[in-house]
Image (tube, rainbow, N blue to C red; front, top):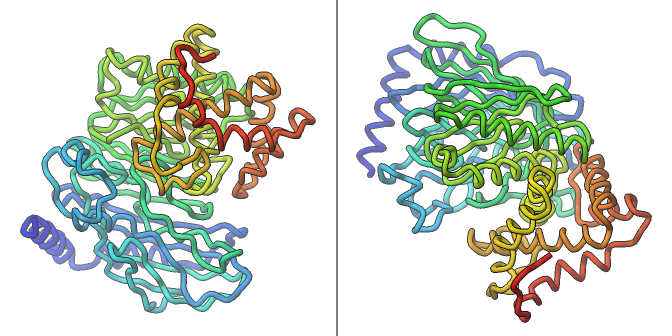
Length: 503
């Protein structure tokens, strides 16, 4: 294992020596510009090149960071999630998943950090934690003040199906750049989350992204924001991506996609990037229908472009602002129902969890339980009440009848779960809680409450359970706190009942 990593690092160093450092110098110079006006939001500029032979990304990153706290900061903590792949013992995945996660066997990867600067000067920095998943960079920053951090690094990529990884024909990148953690004003500290394999975990403030990526000619870039090919020289092509006000920036690039697209009634551009025969129509049919129905219920879709991106072997479908990763295995004709279910869930996440932002760990149910139930409502709207009842009984009844050890509840922190119990408690029992609320409020009142919850999150605040209750109260002129609390804490009492059919 160590020899593999040594060979890859030597190859990268040789590549850097061959270009004489001129390219890196040019990247740094291009980023060392006057600080732009931030408008109170962090600004991230990325200049990158994919080194296909070395399976690595060369990155020059500039971040204009605004101190969000009410005190002077002597350092900022950043996520360095790619270092999770440095050693097998640091992986967040269960041992049973490793064969599917690393189809060619485990190989180390991670961040090779070359330089760190603050306002143009070399900065003191160091990786933190047993697995070096966080980076601390020294600064001197008063409340509301800003500074420019600059990083030069290589991101070594593993051939894997994780949140960062390379397949045979594509590369997936999420949580891949150095991202400042959210600052908890009440605690007076940065709130750091450990990566999770089954739920959203990256807790950060929103930022504007401007990314340029050099790819081998013939490759295509897609992801969060708007990606466009801007130039090429026959061997390489430059792709530019712009995104505003996002917290979970993700990119994909691949070399065998065919692109199909449609527009929703409101003009949302939905693109399918796949090479599986017939999959584009299935993907676009479901996604466009879900986008249009969600717009009817919750207002304007959060993004103007939604890209549905096939990937070689991620473990599951994953949703990011304006981008959804779809495992190739899910796109086959025999998986049409499972594909539709995953697409509806990921479309709902564009509203709940990505726009109506909640703390990813502490309030995971306000994103994933809600998205799961909205996916069921989208099925009901598309195929009727009988299809809805058949689907929820297949998914919910067994979950309601199981005893989950540890006293985990729908609103427990996601870090306390494993993947199996998260599926039972958050996704299935959480959907039951929302269903009971829908029955009590009536469908129209319930949808109005969700719409109000989305509206409350459009200004970038972090929403809480009390915001959710307030949204439901405003939509119905009622008082739903006691009802919701009772179901959140007592839905597991269904384990004491014999159940054959749930309506």
